[in-house]
Amino acid sequence: MQRLRVQHAQSQIVVLSILPTRLPHIPQPVVRQVNQQIAIAVQRRGATFVDLQPAFVDGQGLLRADLTTDGLHLSPQGYGLLASYLGRL
Image (cartoon, rainbow, N blue to C red; front, side):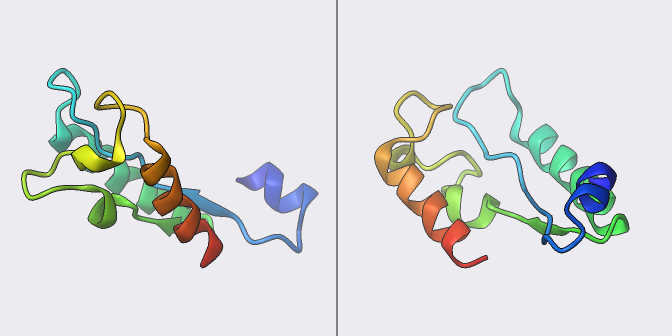
């Protein structure tokens, strides 16, 4: 972020959260904890952190089944939702 700020001083730096998964070997509490740490680091450096979790999780805290092809990668619908977030920035 520091290098980007120097090389592109007029740019807005935006960091997206890590998306949830449906994979049992990637515990969602760990994903949330890492996202919290990323958010703190990003905010300390004056950039913008966008938390995608609320729009991408289901009632169990997993990646919504309709947004993924295999529990990890986004489906076309998932990419559409991601694109709508990016379009608002």
